Image (cartoon, rainbow, N blue to C red):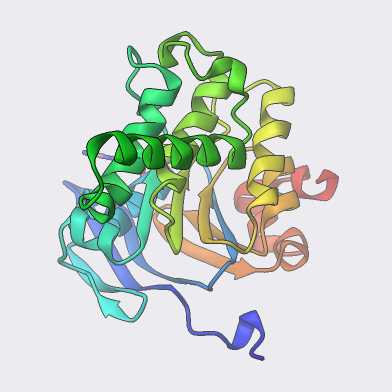
Length: 258
Ligand SMILES: Nc1ncnc2c1ncn2[C@@H]1O[C@H](COP(=O)(O)OP(=O)(O)OP(=O)(O)O)[C@@H](O)[C@H]1O
Ligand SMILES: [Mg+2]
Protein backbone atom coordinates (compact mmCIF):
# COMPACT_ATOMS: atom_id res chain seq x y z
CA UNK A 1 0.00 0.00 0.00
CA UNK A 2 1.35 3.42 -0.89
CA UNK A 3 1.58 6.08 1.77
CA UNK A 4 0.12 9.53 1.17
CA UNK A 5 3.52 11.09 0.47
CA UNK A 6 4.14 8.54 -2.32
CA UNK A 7 0.73 9.04 -3.93
CA UNK A 8 0.36 11.20 -7.04
CA UNK A 9 -0.97 14.66 -6.18
CA UNK A 10 -4.60 15.35 -7.06
CA UNK A 11 -3.72 18.96 -7.81
CA UNK A 12 -0.44 20.38 -9.09
CA UNK A 13 -0.06 24.12 -9.67
CA UNK A 14 3.13 25.09 -11.49
CA UNK A 15 4.33 28.69 -11.50
CA UNK A 16 0.84 30.18 -11.69
CA UNK A 17 0.84 33.96 -12.04
CA UNK A 18 -1.97 36.52 -12.10
CA UNK A 19 -1.50 40.27 -12.37
CA UNK A 20 -4.12 42.97 -11.75
CA UNK A 21 -2.74 46.12 -13.38
CA UNK A 22 0.51 46.91 -11.57
CA UNK A 23 -0.26 44.42 -8.81
CA UNK A 24 1.21 40.90 -9.03
CA UNK A 25 -1.51 39.09 -7.06
CA UNK A 26 -0.06 35.60 -7.67
CA UNK A 27 3.61 35.33 -8.50
CA UNK A 28 4.77 31.99 -9.90
CA UNK A 29 2.88 29.95 -7.34
CA UNK A 30 3.76 26.26 -7.30
CA UNK A 31 2.08 23.87 -4.91
CA UNK A 32 0.67 20.38 -4.84
CA UNK A 33 -2.17 18.79 -2.93
CA UNK A 34 -2.01 15.06 -2.17
CA UNK A 35 -5.00 12.71 -2.09
CA UNK A 36 -6.94 13.14 1.14
CA UNK A 37 -4.56 15.81 2.40
CA UNK A 38 -5.69 18.93 4.24
CA UNK A 39 -3.34 21.56 2.86
CA UNK A 40 -3.73 24.96 4.46
CA UNK A 41 -2.90 28.16 2.58
CA UNK A 42 -2.16 31.01 4.96
CA UNK A 43 -0.81 34.53 4.64
CA UNK A 44 -1.58 38.19 5.33
CA UNK A 45 -4.59 40.08 3.94
CA UNK A 46 -4.07 40.81 0.25
CA UNK A 47 -1.40 38.10 -0.13
CA UNK A 48 -3.26 36.58 -3.10
CA UNK A 49 -4.94 33.58 -1.44
CA UNK A 50 -8.42 34.19 -2.89
CA UNK A 51 -6.88 35.04 -6.25
CA UNK A 52 -5.12 31.68 -6.25
CA UNK A 53 -8.36 29.90 -5.30
CA UNK A 54 -10.08 31.75 -8.18
CA UNK A 55 -7.36 30.68 -10.60
CA UNK A 56 -7.51 27.06 -9.41
CA UNK A 57 -11.31 26.93 -9.64
CA UNK A 58 -11.36 28.48 -13.11
CA UNK A 59 -13.14 31.69 -12.09
CA UNK A 60 -10.04 33.70 -13.10
CA UNK A 61 -7.61 32.81 -15.92
CA UNK A 62 -3.91 32.86 -15.01
CA UNK A 63 -1.51 34.97 -17.07
CA UNK A 64 0.95 32.08 -17.08
CA UNK A 65 1.70 28.78 -15.40
CA UNK A 66 -0.03 25.42 -15.42
CA UNK A 67 -2.55 23.38 -13.45
CA UNK A 68 -3.03 19.62 -13.37
CA UNK A 69 -6.12 18.12 -11.76
CA UNK A 70 -6.05 14.38 -11.24
CA UNK A 71 -3.37 14.26 -13.93
CA UNK A 72 -5.35 16.30 -16.49
CA UNK A 73 -4.18 19.69 -17.72
CA UNK A 74 -7.05 22.05 -16.80
CA UNK A 75 -5.07 25.32 -17.00
CA UNK A 76 -7.50 26.75 -19.56
CA UNK A 77 -10.52 24.54 -18.77
CA UNK A 78 -13.83 26.19 -17.85
CA UNK A 79 -15.24 25.77 -14.34
CA UNK A 80 -17.66 22.96 -15.29
CA UNK A 81 -14.87 20.80 -16.74
CA UNK A 82 -12.90 21.21 -13.52
CA UNK A 83 -15.97 20.24 -11.49
CA UNK A 84 -16.38 17.15 -13.69
CA UNK A 85 -12.69 16.36 -13.06
CA UNK A 86 -13.28 16.38 -9.28
CA UNK A 87 -12.87 19.98 -8.10
CA UNK A 88 -15.34 21.81 -5.85
CA UNK A 89 -15.11 25.05 -3.91
CA UNK A 90 -16.82 27.11 -1.29
CA UNK A 91 -16.57 30.88 -1.19
CA UNK A 92 -15.21 33.52 1.21
CA UNK A 93 -18.72 35.02 1.06
CA UNK A 94 -21.68 32.75 1.72
CA UNK A 95 -23.16 31.42 -1.49
CA UNK A 96 -26.41 29.67 -0.57
CA UNK A 97 -29.98 30.24 -1.79
CA UNK A 98 -31.06 32.42 1.15
CA UNK A 99 -34.82 32.26 0.57
CA UNK A 100 -35.01 28.51 -0.05
CA UNK A 101 -35.20 26.03 2.79
CA UNK A 102 -32.09 24.25 4.01
CA UNK A 103 -33.43 20.98 2.57
CA UNK A 104 -34.19 22.59 -0.81
CA UNK A 105 -30.62 23.89 -0.94
CA UNK A 106 -29.35 20.37 -0.26
CA UNK A 107 -31.77 18.84 -2.78
CA UNK A 108 -30.62 21.25 -5.50
CA UNK A 109 -26.99 20.34 -4.80
CA UNK A 110 -27.69 16.60 -4.77
CA UNK A 111 -29.81 16.83 -7.92
CA UNK A 112 -27.12 18.80 -9.74
CA UNK A 113 -24.72 16.01 -8.87
CA UNK A 114 -26.81 12.87 -9.29
CA UNK A 115 -30.01 13.90 -11.07
CA UNK A 116 -29.18 12.42 -14.44
CA UNK A 117 -28.15 9.10 -12.83
CA UNK A 118 -31.77 8.56 -11.79
CA UNK A 119 -33.48 9.77 -14.95
CA UNK A 120 -34.75 6.21 -15.58
CA UNK A 121 -36.81 6.34 -12.35
CA UNK A 122 -40.38 7.62 -12.20
CA UNK A 123 -40.58 11.10 -10.70
CA UNK A 124 -41.91 10.01 -7.29
CA UNK A 125 -39.19 7.37 -6.91
CA UNK A 126 -36.61 9.86 -8.07
CA UNK A 127 -37.81 12.36 -5.45
CA UNK A 128 -37.48 9.68 -2.75
CA UNK A 129 -33.94 8.78 -3.83
CA UNK A 130 -32.88 12.43 -4.01
CA UNK A 131 -34.47 13.21 -0.63
CA UNK A 132 -32.63 10.29 0.98
CA UNK A 133 -29.35 11.48 -0.53
CA UNK A 134 -29.98 15.05 0.70
CA UNK A 135 -30.81 13.75 4.20
CA UNK A 136 -27.65 11.65 4.23
CA UNK A 137 -25.62 14.68 3.14
CA UNK A 138 -27.16 16.81 5.91
CA UNK A 139 -26.31 14.20 8.54
CA UNK A 140 -22.81 13.71 7.17
CA UNK A 141 -22.26 17.48 7.47
CA UNK A 142 -23.81 17.73 10.95
CA UNK A 143 -26.79 19.84 9.85
CA UNK A 144 -29.43 19.15 12.48
CA UNK A 145 -32.86 17.92 11.29
CA UNK A 146 -34.54 20.73 13.23
CA UNK A 147 -33.05 23.18 10.69
CA UNK A 148 -34.04 21.40 7.46
CA UNK A 149 -37.36 23.26 6.92
CA UNK A 150 -36.06 26.73 7.83
CA UNK A 151 -35.17 29.33 5.20
CA UNK A 152 -31.42 29.09 4.75
CA UNK A 153 -31.05 32.87 5.16
CA UNK A 154 -32.52 32.72 8.69
CA UNK A 155 -29.89 30.28 10.01
CA UNK A 156 -27.16 31.50 12.35
CA UNK A 157 -24.02 32.42 10.41
CA UNK A 158 -22.13 29.29 11.46
CA UNK A 159 -24.93 27.00 10.27
CA UNK A 160 -25.05 28.86 6.93
CA UNK A 161 -21.33 28.23 6.47
CA UNK A 162 -21.83 24.55 7.30
CA UNK A 163 -24.64 24.42 4.74
CA UNK A 164 -22.36 26.01 2.19
CA UNK A 165 -19.72 23.40 2.99
CA UNK A 166 -22.38 20.69 2.47
CA UNK A 167 -23.33 22.13 -0.93
CA UNK A 168 -19.72 21.83 -2.07
CA UNK A 169 -19.38 18.38 -0.44
CA UNK A 170 -22.43 17.15 -2.40
CA UNK A 171 -20.25 16.98 -5.50
CA UNK A 172 -18.12 14.25 -3.84
CA UNK A 173 -15.00 16.14 -4.94
CA UNK A 174 -11.51 14.71 -4.90
CA UNK A 175 -10.27 18.25 -4.17
CA UNK A 176 -12.26 20.82 -2.22
CA UNK A 177 -11.15 24.47 -2.20
CA UNK A 178 -12.27 26.26 0.97
CA UNK A 179 -11.80 30.03 1.13
CA UNK A 180 -12.05 31.14 4.76
CA UNK A 181 -14.85 28.79 5.82
CA UNK A 182 -14.54 30.08 9.42
CA UNK A 183 -14.82 33.78 8.46
CA UNK A 184 -17.17 35.73 10.75
CA UNK A 185 -17.72 32.80 13.12
CA UNK A 186 -17.61 32.84 16.89
CA UNK A 187 -15.30 30.40 18.72
CA UNK A 188 -18.04 27.74 19.22
CA UNK A 189 -19.06 27.82 15.56
CA UNK A 190 -15.41 27.68 14.48
CA UNK A 191 -14.87 24.64 16.68
CA UNK A 192 -17.92 22.86 15.24
CA UNK A 193 -16.81 23.47 11.64
CA UNK A 194 -13.27 22.39 12.52
CA UNK A 195 -14.70 19.15 13.95
CA UNK A 196 -16.82 18.63 10.83
CA UNK A 197 -13.79 19.02 8.55
CA UNK A 198 -11.80 16.74 10.85
CA UNK A 199 -14.56 14.10 10.64
CA UNK A 200 -14.28 14.10 6.83
CA UNK A 201 -10.48 13.98 6.79
CA UNK A 202 -9.12 11.63 4.14
CA UNK A 203 -12.33 11.48 2.13
CA UNK A 204 -11.29 14.39 -0.11
CA UNK A 205 -8.22 16.55 -0.38
CA UNK A 206 -8.85 20.06 0.88
CA UNK A 207 -7.01 23.29 0.16
CA UNK A 208 -7.99 25.41 3.13
CA UNK A 209 -7.51 29.18 3.15
CA UNK A 210 -7.98 30.32 6.72
CA UNK A 211 -6.89 33.06 9.11
CA UNK A 212 -7.89 31.12 12.25
CA UNK A 213 -4.54 29.64 13.25
CA UNK A 214 -6.02 27.32 15.89
CA UNK A 215 -8.08 25.66 13.16
CA UNK A 216 -5.19 25.65 10.68
CA UNK A 217 -2.70 24.06 13.06
CA UNK A 218 -5.26 21.50 14.23
CA UNK A 219 -6.38 20.49 10.74
CA UNK A 220 -3.49 20.88 8.33
CA UNK A 221 -1.28 18.02 7.19
CA UNK A 222 0.82 20.61 5.36
CA UNK A 223 0.80 24.39 5.22
CA UNK A 224 1.86 26.75 2.43
CA UNK A 225 2.51 30.39 3.26
CA UNK A 226 1.73 33.05 0.67
CA UNK A 227 3.19 36.55 1.03
CA UNK A 228 2.93 39.21 -1.71
CA UNK A 229 1.69 36.54 -4.13
CA UNK A 230 4.63 34.20 -3.54
CA UNK A 231 4.84 30.90 -1.69
CA UNK A 232 7.57 31.56 0.86
CA UNK A 233 7.34 28.16 2.58
CA UNK A 234 5.57 24.80 2.45
CA UNK A 235 5.85 22.21 5.19
CA UNK A 236 4.29 20.36 8.07
CA UNK A 237 2.74 22.47 10.84
CA UNK A 238 5.87 21.87 12.93
CA UNK A 239 8.16 23.01 10.10
CA UNK A 240 6.05 26.13 9.46
CA UNK A 241 5.88 26.98 13.17
CA UNK A 242 9.67 26.75 13.37
CA UNK A 243 10.32 28.71 10.15
CA UNK A 244 11.90 32.05 11.04
CA UNK A 245 10.98 33.70 7.69
CA UNK A 246 7.34 32.73 8.17
CA UNK A 247 7.32 34.03 11.74
CA UNK A 248 8.68 37.37 10.58
CA UNK A 249 6.38 37.67 7.55
CA UNK A 250 3.13 36.44 9.03
CA UNK A 251 2.83 34.30 12.13
CA UNK A 252 4.71 36.37 14.67
CA UNK A 253 4.37 34.55 17.98
CA UNK A 254 0.93 33.20 17.04
CA UNK A 255 2.28 29.90 15.70
CA UNK A 256 3.83 29.04 19.02
CA UNK A 257 0.45 29.16 20.78
CA UNK A 258 -1.35 26.86 18.29
N1 LIG B 1 -10.54 41.57 -9.42
C1 LIG B 1 -9.51 42.28 -8.94
N2 LIG B 1 -9.11 43.40 -9.54
C2 LIG B 1 -8.05 44.12 -9.07
N3 LIG B 1 -7.33 43.76 -7.99
C3 LIG B 1 -7.69 42.65 -7.34
C4 LIG B 1 -8.80 41.83 -7.78
N4 LIG B 1 -8.90 40.78 -6.94
C5 LIG B 1 -7.93 40.92 -6.02
N5 LIG B 1 -7.21 42.03 -6.28
C6 LIG B 1 -6.05 42.47 -5.48
O1 LIG B 1 -5.12 41.41 -5.46
C7 LIG B 1 -4.49 41.34 -4.18
C8 LIG B 1 -4.72 39.96 -3.61
O2 LIG B 1 -6.07 39.88 -3.24
P1 LIG B 1 -6.72 38.55 -2.65
O3 LIG B 1 -8.16 38.81 -2.48
O4 LIG B 1 -6.32 37.41 -3.50
O5 LIG B 1 -5.96 38.45 -1.24
P2 LIG B 1 -6.25 37.46 -0.02
O6 LIG B 1 -4.94 36.84 0.34
O7 LIG B 1 -7.37 36.55 -0.34
O8 LIG B 1 -6.65 38.47 1.13
P3 LIG B 1 -7.68 38.26 2.36
O9 LIG B 1 -6.92 37.49 3.41
O10 LIG B 1 -7.94 39.65 2.84
O11 LIG B 1 -8.91 37.57 1.87
C9 LIG B 1 -5.09 42.45 -3.32
O12 LIG B 1 -4.22 43.56 -3.36
C10 LIG B 1 -6.39 42.76 -4.03
O13 LIG B 1 -6.77 44.11 -3.83
MG1 LIG C 1 -9.25 36.24 0.47
